[in-house]
Image (cartoon, rainbow, N blue to C red; front, side, top):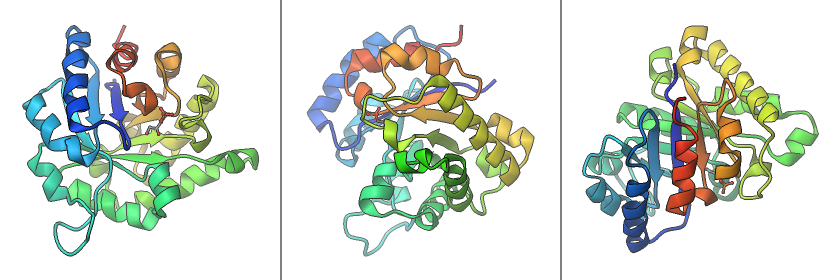
Length: 254
Ligand code: 13P
């Protein structure tokens, strides 16, 4: 059984004081929740504060939204794996479509980051997903395969167990237009098949694959009930404690 993982990607939102306010309310909302892994990935400026407030919480894990692959040095504006480790960060989102599209990240760069994360005992949440034009051209499976093979090159079967893949169709991000449960399941099954080809079926069966793209309380349960959907990576709906906690509750094992 794959434990469901629900992660908040706050993107470029939430100041330090807003983060503290969120956590106070969110913690009360999820007091009785068990059996779900919860991750919050705030902006870098709020990581230290959130780390301090969480105090090594087993219930809510800390995530980062990006990092560079070098440990230190002359890389203005970048954050290293060592800096994240010191704050007890467990997960790091890598290759988000906004990083790929706005900041020009390639699969080759993302691959270096994946290896750097694994070497520092940070678990990558590797994002993959097709654009609307690619889906309309019937190329979504090919795109997923290229992104997965490029980003995960050289990752061993054992290391793959520490990787979470997030399938985020670009056309569903922040648009209010989510993939239908069937479209999402179909893509997730394909991701798992590619992971099996990269490693083996037994390993691929254990890797968690999250869906991301306009997940909200109203659609979370049906999305999360699909056989190959093991969690959600939530943007907009994770900025408000009540709506994020409702999504988390939809992932509780029945
Ligand atoms: P939304 O939930 O706002 O569509 O964002 C999804 C996303 O990109 C999470 O990483």
